Length: 274
Image (cartoon, rainbow, N blue to C red; front, side):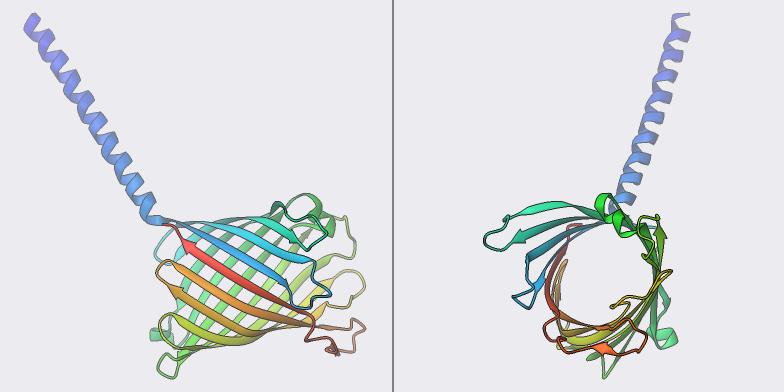
C-alpha cells in the first residue's frame, strides 16, 4: 500500500512538473514572439511660425508609436500625442496637454518596385479627439491613405505620390464643420547617400462641408526644403512649409500675396527604442 501511494505521489509530481514546464515554455515562446513583433518609436516634432509677427511661440508634439506586427507586411499602431506650448517672453512659458490619439493599420508592399515598377502602400488612420477639440464639430476623423514611390537615376532620385480621403465623424456642435477632405501630394528627394536626402514637394487639400464654403477650403502647401537624415534606429527631419489658400468665393484663385509669410519651420527627431 505504501509503495502504491509512493508511486501515485511520484506520478502526480511528474505530471505537475511537466505541465508547469510546458506552461513556462509557452510563456517564453509568447514573450519571445511579442518582443520580435512589438516596436516602440518616439517622435518629437517641434515647430514654429516663420513670420515673427504671427509667432505665438514654439509648439512641441510628443508622439509615441506603439507598433505590433501582424504579419510580414501588416502592422497596427496606436499613437497617443502629448502637446507642449512654449510661449514667448511675457506669456506663460510652458504648458502642455493631451492632444489626441490615432489607431492605424498599415499594409505594405501591395506593389513593389522590383515586381511592378512602383512601390505602393496603404494606411488606414483613425484620429480620436477629446475635450475642447470636439467643439470644432467632430469627435474623430478617418483616413484612407495610399502612398506610392519609385527610385530613378540609379537610386539617387526618389519620386513620391500620395493621396488620401478623410471622412469626419461630426457631432453637431458646429453645423459648418467639414464633412470630408481630399489630399493629393507629390515629392522628389535627391539621395546623397544611404543617410542624407534633400527634397521638395507640394500638397493640395480640398475641404467639403454641408454649409457655405470658407476661405482655405482649397489650399496648396509647399514643402521647401525638406532635409532628411537617418542612421540606425534614429532619424532627423528639417523642413519648412508654406500655405496658399483659396479665397472661398468659388473663383478658384489662390491668395498668394503673403505666401512667403505664411510659413512654418519644423524639426522632427525620432528613435526606435526596440
